[in-house]
Length: 364
Figure 1 (tube, helix red, strand yellow):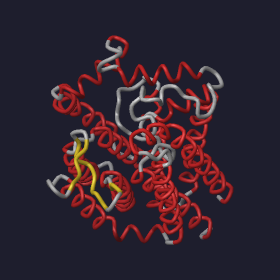
Figure 2 (cartoon, one colour):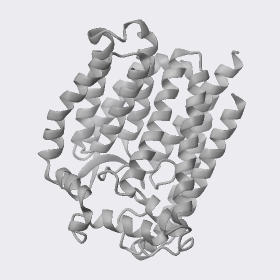
Figure 3 (cartoon, rainbow, N blue to C red):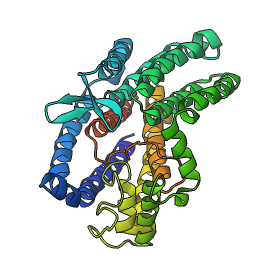
Figure 4 (spheres, one colour):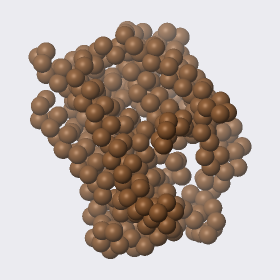
């Protein structure tokens, strides 16, 4: 599987390099006006990127199977972080959300690191309980209880996007493991009351749904972000207006260097640039799936499925939001968007995926 590892490394390197270029391009003017330093976000991103590569290489040096021993402690630690971030004075609040710990000049988002803990726990559980996964009480319910516990605390922050992402990935993992379809269907039916409670009954979330259906009905109000994103993509046309020449980044499009960075890519590089990004993520999913298919160890197999699903679905959700195909979720584009915690977690996942491939190669 050496060829697969090389292709994954090339794909991720291309995405990371594009991220560096576009973070500077999309944030330079904003950073100069608001912070007096056009390189502010780029410099912080480079620090995050260095730490991310260090963590990725460290992850590649250990035998990933050792993580099975720490699956439960990692889940407990992750839940503890989610509880602590909600404690006034410990967690940092911004724009009505309390999702971060402040560590010096940086902010750490524990829900991002929970993704790794959940993937490792579920992969370990499925590897140990393969013969009982079809059982509702002994195979399906334990995973759902853990998932539900995480969901409660992440929604409390509030962060519905991460909750949905983690939930979908876990469902994919247990479906691949052989869970009964009727159990999954029953869970989906139970999701309707949850949708009513957490979306319809929450005004700003319901407003996102209504706005998504017709953002141009209120282009200067609730639909402002989506319409500005679509204007950016439309302005880019086929080949873009040129690198660094985006108009929408000039204080028109909010979150231009974070959640909506793809819109700036589309404006400056056109359809060709956005298609290249989609192609890179599609290639990552295909090559990652090939690694999973060739992995003989059950824990490694389920973990690689979870990693590929997590990165692939998060990229799909971000792209869908940027082009107006999905309601706004607040999820960054993996490897490209500005955000230290998300970048580090994505790179750790890549390290684990390469580790799984390398170890299984050595044992063949």
